[in-house]
Length: 381
Image (tube, rainbow, N blue to C red; front, side, top):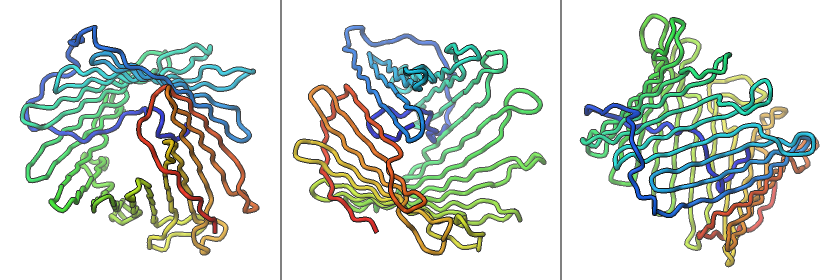
């Protein structure tokens, strides 16, 4: 699927929320409490996605909001036998039950053996904000079996406790199918977040897996620190995982930087350091393996222009440092009844030349009021 900031993003986001209070039962029945006279807000967007040496793909998205109900639909169509034909639909319905409760139902439709549209997966999620200020999420995912019937395949329970003094604790339990039948705890995550007075946010997320003997063992630790200084923001994330000897060791370090000038121009960069370097064996140290830089500006007419360059290690010559491998150019043109976005992707081939590999064009009825400044072109090294 083409990446674009202009279309609706689907998927369940695992929000770390917690509860130390007694939480009410979930999936309670309710009715739309808002009046039928409230206006309906809706828009559609169509993206044509063309990849070199592949059939075109079309993604049609629609958004409809009325009262406390919102329905987002994403339909993916493939070009087959001279026309676009159905491949997959994802429907996401959000219902605000009351001021403290939100229910989200996501349905994924595919094709059965006869090419007919059929429900293949459904996720039901309900989020409660408890009277004491804590929160709770219960998310149940069901997938179709060989007979086409839905059966539970995953259950997420997320509880958050606001400890105070800028500290929040979140606990997540993931239940997966067990060899004994039903769902059983398979993953546990504990997250501790702290917000300091100097615009710094620190978090540590620990993932635990069962060791086969009935005990929980630390599998991964993620530590992140975000610092905000005016319009500049820096985030560092370090990931440690168990090695073959059962010891935790750092496997990656990601540094993200974002800045915005007084004219509104934005620039960002993401540098990834890893112990795994393509074309070499591990030496126990972290090495810079990828750098992504992005810029965006707007013209006086409100057109947005973006550029992204991706530098990576060359597996054939890993000691030569990073080299530009991917270039992405985007342009958003607003209009009185919507906008149009064009995105092109160029990739370096084996001869060192950049060839066009992907072109996306999105047309939407949604009207944007923000504007961005056009960026100057950068020279390639």
